[in-house]
Length: 419
Image (tube, rainbow, N blue to C red; front, side, top):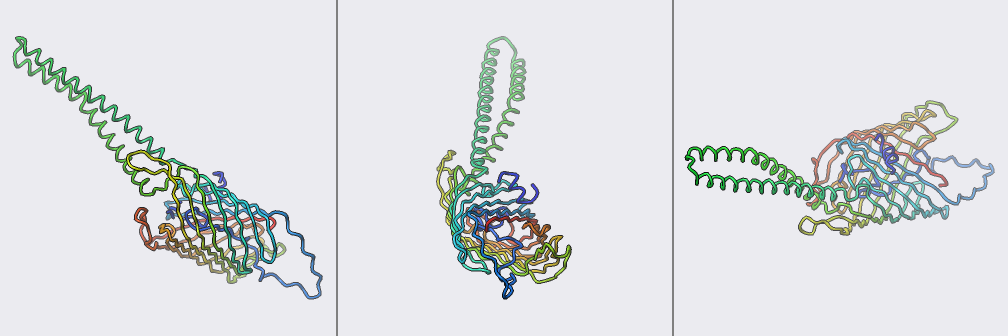
């Protein structure tokens, strides 16, 4: 899998950084659907010349389509590549205060097979743009879907238990044969003692039988016992992980989200088709994205209520997640050959559920490149220093050191029609 968005597309579509996936991960930030990357804000548009006739406004199209995809390869996530694809089909009402109603589908995928990053959903929602050119929007949506890795952990548990049972049956058979042969040896010994055979011959025969018994069965018993111990250890480890998570998916997942999205950018590329092939404006450039989203999940899981049997349960997870990502830097190049910028970036997550992958901050330098001015496709490379806040639930402890560094290679793509 190359870039994140290509990975998602090829797959048909993880907590945790291992699970940190940008914005629209099911268990981290919210609906990160940016406006066109290179579109100038309303404040940057040239005013009409006085006395010049203005064209009549065209009627809005009956429907609009929006596609956004984002992917990241992170060295901190054990070289994990994760990403998502989000597609919306909607209808816009009003122009002064645009109100959109939409249907949507989205899919998440990663290479580490974290179930929270391997999910397909579909649903409906609405959004209203409250202010412009500093964009502040409110949205609410409901989606339902399934995990690509549904029940894989519980199936693994069942497979382990089957192997353990099979090895135990083999061990019991060997032990039964051992006891049977031992009884036969003792019977043979007492039979020999009733004859005129000397005691030395009796002892010689006994030692020979005892050696044969030991060589034949003791090695097999030890090997089978060691295999069972190994399987039991694997089972205990898997069961402990499942019990601590209590979130292993076993069926459908339903999610309700509502929140605010804020975005503002300045110094964006001009993307003038008639401009020079290469231009080096060296102007101040920046972009700020933030969201605050309430998320309510209803997830079918496999839980153990005593013993080894797992049954279906419904887990409710309510969370308020705040996410922010400011970028500030210099636009180095801006022409028909593409645009490039060097910048300093920061990421911050905070949630009320105390998920460790949603409670950290990162910052560092980066570069971004938009190879085709007419296409809202970006490639980024960043070196980040980060730190977890230390907010983690006892049943889901932080598996990493509090401080870390990360190399993140990302790509994102936006395309819209009728917006």
